[in-house]
View 1: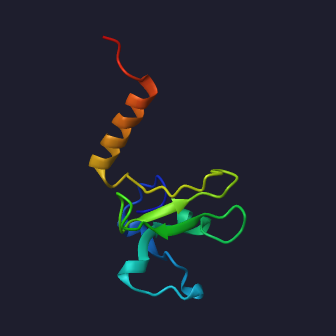
View 2: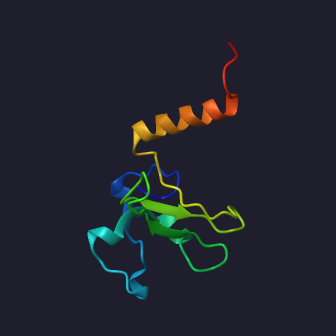
Length: 107
C-alpha cells in the first residue's frame, strides 16, 4: 500500500522493513509497511534501487513511508509518499499542482 503511486490492496501486500532487517531494522510496527511484491523488489542497494525512509516529525506525512527514487530517476532524491489511499491528500495535491501549472488567474 505504500509503494510509490501503488494502489494494491492490503491483502496483496507483504510487510516491508523500512530499515532493512539485515541491517538491524526492528520487526515492529514503527519500522514496517505494507508493500506489494512489485515495489518490494525495487528496494535494493544498487545504483538503480529505491530506498525507503520513515517520514519524520518535520514532514506533513509524519510516520508514513517515503520512497526515494534512484539518482538516475530523481537527482534530488526527494522522498515521496503514496497518496492513493489518502483521498483528501490526493485532491489537495492535484489542486495545488494545477494552480501552480496554470498560474494566477487574470482578473
